[in-house]
Length: 235
Image (cartoon, rainbow, N blue to C red):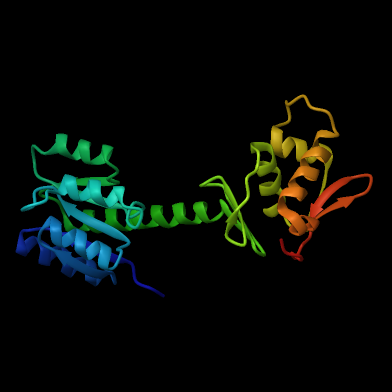
């Protein structure tokens, strides 16, 4: 199993070594940096699973490092735990507003830091799992609820909001048969006032936009629709 990689950004050599030692004892893969520029270079060389970041650094300070990490698509999802000295709480709040996930005030106990790191790593793992559930793959088709886009053979398919919701519902439940009313509830909500045949219209336009791949949406006479359990056909 891959060990989580922790990047420690701390300019005080003794504290940096103390943190490295204790996190390595917890079976983390630990990298270190003594200034902001080195930290950014190291984070881009090998993206860490979490960054322990001191606010007061030579050159590029911790707030700017945090801003750049959170503004870069490669590292935006990496949790950042900031280390602050007494009197730096205002900067810590600014850091949180820029996307930092937590902060610890110096002096702190090593056990507290290790516990915070562990908690943030668990939270990040849960978040990744939740995000994974928002992206579905069905053969050559990808439905991404986070970006609200549909790709077929890596090419975008332009759908209306209703068509997108309908396709997403089917792709997340392949092989299951749905009545028209169930699809209406899933796509529009149970309180929407629409006529039953609207589902047929949306399915027809959705099939057309998907080309031959649209044949994977099967009609169940007298009931509704389902997506084949295994995809077939290509656009």
